[in-house]
Length: 349
Image (cartoon, rainbow, N blue to C red; front, side):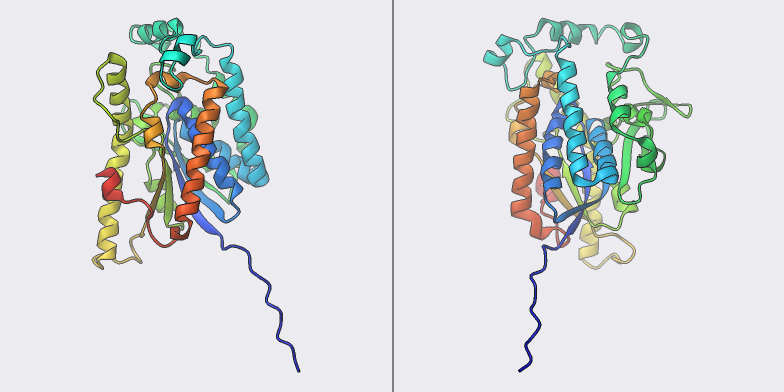
């Protein structure tokens, strides 16, 4: 009797994701944790990445690492970047004091006299005055970690970095094919900290003012239908801001979330028309939206904590991001490629 061929179990089916990474200073360590967990999952392939500010730095390092040495290399480079930040912070005056650790919220440095002095002086003097030589310590580490000639030739990952044109108010999207360190610095240029980088005769500030992050680059330029937004800035907060710092912090998060919320409305509108049969899916892309956030945890953090690069705090954010990514993969992996796991109306309307 002829035996039937033995059927070997097939490996887990891989699914593709596009990533959209928000900015938020030191809070970008949350995204580091998310990415570290995603890289551990062999079922996930990343096709496109769009990033703004700290999200742009994470995005560029991730894209280069995947291109240069795969998942392991990407994990190593992300770890090196955040470790560098922490070690550099040891020489910085922006350190949490004993009072911050006892009386302040998680990661706060608001009791630091250096933070209070900087916060005051940054409202009185511009970086063109107190940093006339335009020193930016991140340029060196970015150039050390990323071989831009390799990144520019990448055919596996589509990378998009976003900045705000100071003079025109328009969003600028830089493609990986001509990406330079200056473009990443432009995306992360907070105007009260750094001078506006000049690129091809144009001047740029942080991309978060016009797109944090914009979703359209990965929708238009990849075949993947799924976009995973790693959201740092909380949409909801538990109480009305009352102190000056709380008010400025809320103004900042509202500003940096506004463009994303408007774009989500547009995506929902197009998706609804496709699902109703009123738009041809052959002409209009049906996009599935997923999000990883830590609304409860992030809403408790102060604006000053975005300057806190102490490794204890960064590790807290990293672990939180890793935990939230693990929850997403456990609860929503099966939805990737089939439907959105995020209720866009409930979250963004």
